[in-house]
Length: 237
Length: 204
Image (tube, rainbow over all chains, first blue to last red; front, top):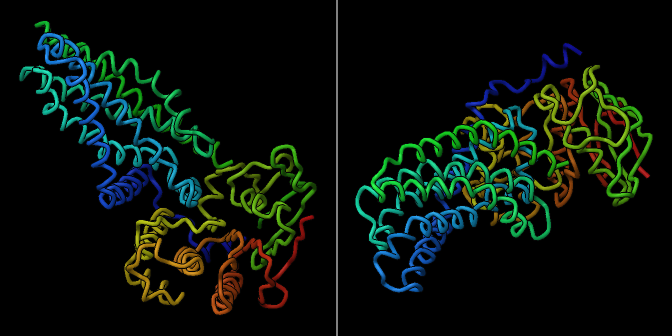
């Protein structure tokens, strides 16, 4: 038996960082090839946000009051819209089986996929948001806090979304179920994110809200990959 | 040595198989045959550590293993029914990604050599969606040359493969067995392997 294992390689070098790097590099490479999908997502964000001023009329105080909430809700929806891409294609073509059987820790590979998902969806949404905030008459410091909040909050959305995405793999009408599962979990992020901008508008510090967003990000970064990895294993069983 | 005792599996409420026992030693291949729906794929998934059997146990090198056991993962190469190719990536990129995913450094020359061995040098830079079913299967099987693992679990490796491809597969499996490897192969075709290395399991 020992001679047999000596003749064969047992998978070498399979640490968590290697797994994160592999998954992030692969998914970012794939995202860079489907720029159209990212474009559609950003356009969706722009259009949803733009519909509100058109719908409620050009009343400056009203627009300023609802601006942060609208921008955050639209960001939640856009982020959720892109979630099925996270695992579904890999599940369909058999790659997810290979990922689950890889010597790298599955949670590390899932983390890498989440990082790539955020870089391709949450990050552009956050960068674009100050521009859209202008439509609502938000001032400079409010725009800065809006973008900061989204930079802290969108990774949490991707992390929580990964759990739902893994749990709804292979489920018929999974996308609708995914929304039902995930949107309630997004509520705290929405409240603190929009609340941060409201705080600045009211002349108080946004630090408490931003700190809470940061804390939520840290907690999700530790827990969500493990939960999503468990979900992937259940889906493959 | 891969050993299974009293394995049983079911899909929904239907029992696929029960009381399946086998022992495969170094240098042996177990050919799993059976009608459609007899549970070949499920047995392959159990052996690869993807699925838990309803009853029974699986042991690898004398130790009982549960699904996703790290020791089993580190020494298994599983090639499932779908070849695990992403449509957007080229044949070369797909192969490179799959090899790296298994913790093995993929050097470009070795990847090219593996693709050439499977007569895919002209399709190297084509996205996987432009490949035929047989060519996709070949890209998947090219991993056999690059990842040296003790246990090969191959689910229908001959599906969509032409006779030249089947011959190449037989060659790979034979040399794997000769160097002390183990293979579990679910297939409807009769593979020609060296005498004395082939054992059969028929599921009903």
